[in-house]
Image (cartoon, rainbow, N blue to C red; front, side, top):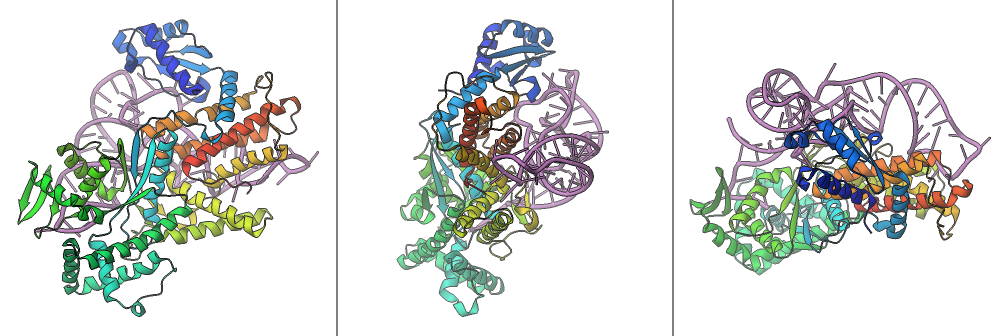
Length: 562
RNA sequence: GGGCGUGUGGCCUAGUCUGGAUAUGGCGACAGCCUCCUAAGCUGUAGAACGGGGGUUCGAAUCCCCCUACGCCCGCCA
């Protein structure tokens, strides 16, 4: 079963094509403002090609095209198409009731995509700035899943680089009693103190740098003890990071370590292959790849590998395991991203990753830095979100302690995700404590609240089976149609959001959908609506499933009450 | 110096790729709505010619050029 909204669009294209005898790619359909219809076809570009007055074309189309379930009208140089409201409402209700929370899912693609996100260096706990990456990545992954892809969510663990070497040096040379107290017991919070102190000492004492280079050298030469130390340290921190992410419903499917690429020799192989490319060169014994006057070094003169080489090896490894690759990276990696794409192309590797870049989150105007310790940890932010949600609930409801805790967790974490995902990735975000957690207006609780209201109606109605008779789904009123129309748009919104890799548009849609239900809720009594009851229950149920599906796509939980 | 990105009502934000019909929504402000399914809700009012300037076009927030502010990058760090 398809979706009315998508079928209707296909029908327009098909019929326009036939009437004008033109090819499909000449037809550009847009979504106009509500009053005009569901789709509009501006005829300006067609006018140029067909050498006709756009108004005439619009008129011709409006008289010659007849939609199966809808109207066609010309309005100046535009043709407006409107789906029959009752048809749309009925079909969408049936679709929701059948698919339940998988409403919106698109046909299976039998293609696999690896979504790489977060991949933060395991040198300390995630901070709010770093949290933007996993939230974007996980939302994209969920969007791809719902649109029929097989998705693997992967974290690339840099367990061997210089940053980790500094941390390793710290754990080998520093005494716990010289460090400040850890904020929490988690390993990431505990170990970051060594990293920060080591960095501080490194600035003051150059001889430490030699120690660190020596550590890197022996590790890459295959010193088992040191390698184990690297891996263990990284792993401990990774556990802490994963734990933080879990609270946000972010679960990775796999972790690929950089060390594994050194150990299996693939990095060495990459260095050899790159050296054979015409864009490569040597400077002072060090190997580089050059593109548009930008030299990227891939190996040091002492032969050890650099991050770019290892990342190429990683992408080759990934390319063998998926049909599509998607990376989420901070904007500081833009040049690196282009480098990776360019080298992979030169090496004839496919697929080449598509990269979504996001700009940074500042903290009240200041840079967030793990090294300098100027940041709000994600863990603290989540705790604050939880507490704030708790306060809000207490203000308006009596609930048991257990419930209170689980509800405020769902609301708080939803707010964290939503407030970050609703802004387009390339736009900078300045984190200000007072505004960071909105619980009103365009916020996660707003979405959850609408879902809860629907739930509440259904609960009061009882777990009765919904027996829809042939006469129930008709005589739809305006507000009912408006809501169902909004619901019906989900598959289209999802399709477009995936096509553009723009998770924030999903958030935008979620807000529109919730707002529509809140209006319906005000204007149309459900439980006291006599003969319209079955129809309205069906509408509320449809909304509950659709909203549930949208929230699932955004990784936001659904409290039963709030 | 070069490259990439961002600049939309007092504040935040959609739309920019794929140029079109009155520029999206929220916060805040003001005025209203709980004898009726949870007011974390709803309704209304005021408020932006889209950083500045030029250009292309029948038509520009959207495309091109110049300028400007801010962020990021240009390392044998990652």
